Image: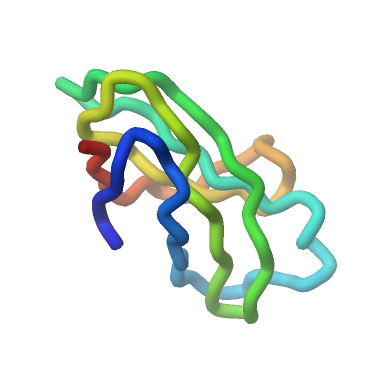
Length: 88
């Protein structure tokens, strides 16, 4: 889904390429407010599914609003391009 409640818990599948099972312990999803967003930044551990997909549960946030969702395969040192995720 592209939106979910501020209570969190929405199971998200992130599609990509070149995900490695060896990186499973270092997979992280980051949610950060975009321009005009009211929420606060939050992170969630991600789970390796396949070379083209990982999953993460949206974390609980205060304030909601439009967030940028990005993924790191190396524990947060580097991040993917963001996609939009809306908290309500």
